[in-house]
Image (cartoon, rainbow, N blue to C red; front, top):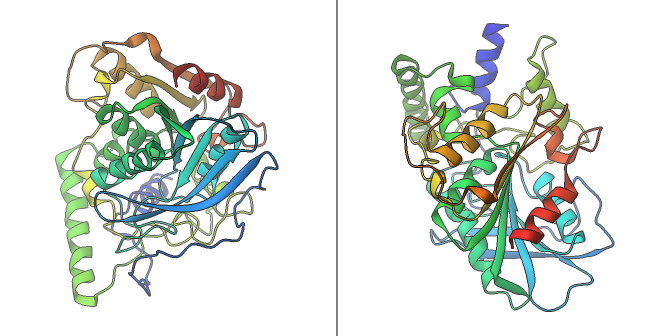
Length: 366
């Protein structure tokens, strides 16, 4: 069981246990399909439009814009992304469309190097570039005539929950942030799950493996996929791996463009995340923050520790000790009874996503 867990961890965190295949194409993706190919049906209450916008790094991000059919005047707006390795056709689009039904202009986007957005090599991630993806989405919304530039928020799901907090810490234009079933990707890539590999020897071993993968890429001219969610699913897989499989590998959430559903990130695609810690200024976020986690989520500690650090300036998993938050009254941690990590992707069988809570949070704070 221990060996399976470690192998699963390596696959999920982009270490060197790659599948024996190479990418056929490392070029940018800039074309978008106009047909409805989401993992959820289009609501009759919203208008939908495919759009693109640029980041300061020159990438073109593809996005789905959802506008309530009852819209009028300047509206409150929300940008959505995540989970880490997913695309806008999956749960970020569901969040965006549903909140548009609740009266917001919403934008679900594919991050750089992912889905229909540009960037190469494909399936690459970077703390600064991914944070900029959110900021560029804010840039786009600010310039829309139907959006109130002073009333814009963000939602980050899974690994993008941590990225959303990082964006809120750097950009005061973000007036409200919801981090759903969040991961801290810098912490998990550097320390492993539950900080099990939080030591110099383990990090050196991973660094050596990633360096070896870079040599292979230089020699072959191609990156090697690290594998998405484990498939076939071993009978003794940990429950959280079974949950990922149930979402990404079944009709519930499978999508042909999703890295998590298919070949995953390339083997050193998240190397920069392993060598950084990017949530150390969230204790200075003055705008409203809602962190939502499932009671039974394997990732729950990320959200609880981030909330504690955001409020007090110190928490497990954070080496820094900083000042308490200057505006603690608009911060909240919500634990959903009985929910797992992936239940907050699409609601799961018990439909646990707290839509009314999200609506009221953004309505109040935007």
